[in-house]
Image (spheres, rainbow, N blue to C red):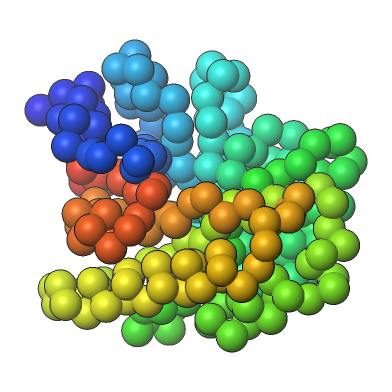
Length: 221
């Protein structure tokens, strides 16, 4: 099937409460343009350099999400246009995002990345670290960021019960933080970003409101 057909089929299968992020890493601008022509406008990239290069050549009315690991020294390159940063994994990074957002006279929406997978290679805060960050005075003082929710990745495994358990733990934490913390200017918990091409159906069953899908749209790299 074509990219257009893949997107249409995928969107038709999703509940209205779930937002689709088309993940474009390593795919050229021409393929992304096919997705745009099919009416899709929300895209995710893993690396800042690739994100910036695509932003420059594609229409400016798109939403770009940074879904991969973000180094503090790279924030300034995307601060003027990024729609959502999924991968905030430290207060240090959040401080830098806030600083660069202030320079751009804007508020940058972010998600806290939570580590629930068994692989050591995946980044993210554990539940205690994330809760401590959200309750910290340092976080409360940040005026140019808004935490819109959390993001997580399940273990890359064929064990669907393990995947389900990990997604469920993310949802449980998300709901508990919504109850413990009153919404504030920089804490507006609306998004639970979990689920990729291989496991998004389980993620949606476990409460995901945003899925990050690449190969099911653009094919394998």
